[in-house]
Image (cartoon, rainbow, N blue to C red; front, side, top):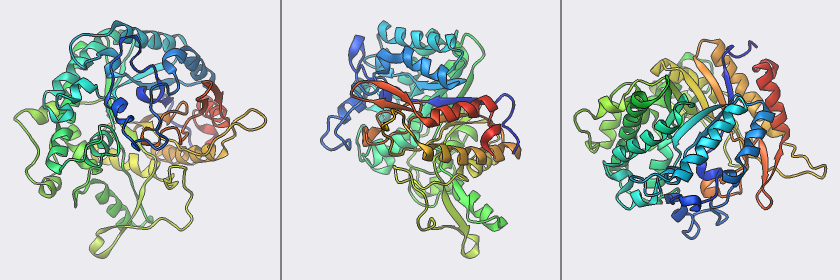
Length: 451
């Protein structure tokens, strides 16, 4: 197997609310996740991100762990209400100072910062003004982006606007499974989604206009992936069609979120399914479709598709007994080949795998270590498929493992562990798992040791 491209970037990823803790400290405001976690039965173990991994106070040690792992890059998010407690208006200097110190520590450790501007912690004060349902949310986000770019772009070159709008819109506003916990009808869901994409476009404009050095800009949606049931060209065509077709109302359709940003239009089949409900104004699509330097893809699994009658894409059941992670997600390594391949064919934009990993049942062994051979096997299988995509000319430029450390896993609370580093939430002790040491060898060899 050929190694990955010479300039391939190896990293790990986190999100602010999942690791920082220190909610409300040093002048920080609160987010929709803070009040959502107080709702009875909203979170599986009735926990919250109030303390989480206390990264806010342990960031130097955590950067030291990144250095120990040999990470070349670290993807993290900014907490909007930590920097702007009300979401707009006054800036909290202590909040900005934290990210200043974090960026400096990363650069001192020779770890390149990749910043995600929004990873779900929408300011509570703005939620009470309509949140993403308010068209002004796009301008609120642009103003917040300007604050961050003005402060950090002298040292930060890599930016992502939004993380997984399918989740914070679909799970947050349609099913109520995530914050803010709404169960809206489709017109309001799509209105919120349109405003989020408009916010993305305006943020890109702000970054381009205000960055103090040349910037690399992208965004990181869910990369829903279809895997052909066989090498038959008909199955491959069916899987490709399924990835970008809209046949029923659903929040997970790739083309609904990708096409406006990369192709400058909503997909026609989506408009037929949803009807005339998008609050589209003149110039919106021009704003949304700002040129991007990369597409971030969060890929964990794929759905198997075959060509049915008249070559219609048809879902195939997973094999009986297929391996599953603790999240009950099927282990489908081919997703990291077919996903990047199909997205590259359609959008011709360089890609980063901005999230990939697995939750398994980790604990500290009697010898003091955390032994996670399943995570090593999972990651090796997926990376071998990603290497195959690269070898065939798919322009993938980096891989960020989810996650650097165990953390607050949203509605699952602390019942899921995705980290390369084990976190004891009682003592805040960090223990690099066997997978962390293995991942270091992958980075050192640029993936040549995956055979």
